[in-house]
Structure formats: C-alpha cells, structure tokens
Amino acid sequence: MSAAAFALTGTSAAAADNLDCMSRPFEAGDQEVVDGFVRDFDLVEWSVTGGGEVLADVMNARADMCAIEFGWSDEAGTDAFLWLIGGFLEQGLKANAPISAEEIGRLEASFAAADEARLLRSMGPQIDPDFYGTAEPSDDDLIYLGGLLENSGVAATDENATFTGALLAARLTRIHWARVFAKN
Image 1 (tube, rainbow, N blue to C red):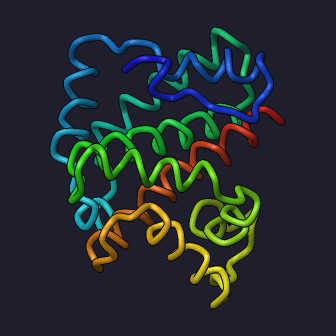
Image 2 (cartoon, rainbow, N blue to C red):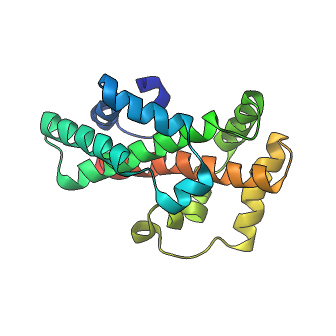
C-alpha cells in the first residue's frame, strides 16, 4: 500500500507525516491479510460482520507501532486506526465496484467538486455519531447526495447508489479521522 493511496488534503504537514506511518508497507503476512480483504471485499457482508479479527489485529499492530514511534496518545492511535479502515474500505470498494474505473473517476470528480462541509454534516453521523450526532440526513441532503451520482453521469441504479454512498462514506471517514487525529 503506498502513501499516495492515502493522500489527504486539509491536514497539517506534521499530522499527515505522522498519520502516513499507518500506510507504510506491511510485512508479507500482514500484506496478504490486507490484500485478501481488498480482493474479497463484499459491502453487504462487511456491513454485517466487519473486517474480521485478523485484519483488526494487523491494523492494531500498525497503530501500536506508529504510536510508539511518534508518541501518539491512545486517542490518536484510535483515530489513525479508523482512518486506515476508511482507506481499506475505499480500496475494497474500488476493487469490487459495480462500475468501471472510468466511472469511478467521474464519481471522484463529482466528490471533489462537492461541498465537503455539507457532505460531512450529512454523512457524519454514520462516521462518528459522538462528533456529528445521530440525526438522519434531511431530504435536502439526500437530494444533494443523489446529485453527486447524477452529476457523475453514472447510471442511477440502486446498486450504483449504494456503491456511491459507501465510497463517499469511506472517503469521508478518512477525511474526518485525519482531522480528529491532527487535534490529538
């Protein structure tokens, strides 16, 4: 996994450098676990079972290593762990997408042009209810979110809408937890 795979905007250089510790290359056995998660990712199954204990062990070991190296607080280690989950989810979603790579690129362009603050307000409760609260997105927010798919030109099927929401949530997970990490 390369640092470029987890490139972020909106965080301080020091936080990004320290957080980048989480995306250093894994040892062979751990990389096999990560690769297996990405290769075999299934959104429906993951939403029920999570990533599994073996993947969590790999991620915890990495967070512990980085925490020792950089003197992170327990909270920062947890934030980094959650940031890494977002990255693995994004990779798994893209590797098993119901749409083409070109369509994913169009979705990403639509995400980049969107109002990030509004996206975090709308989807934040799914990412961090302690921070954003538990309110459901408003009808206006749902229309706005649906417009991201429409603006991308990707066919508006139920499967594509679910994929788009999950991909956006994974991306916002990384953005949110990087910001929280930078404050710890």
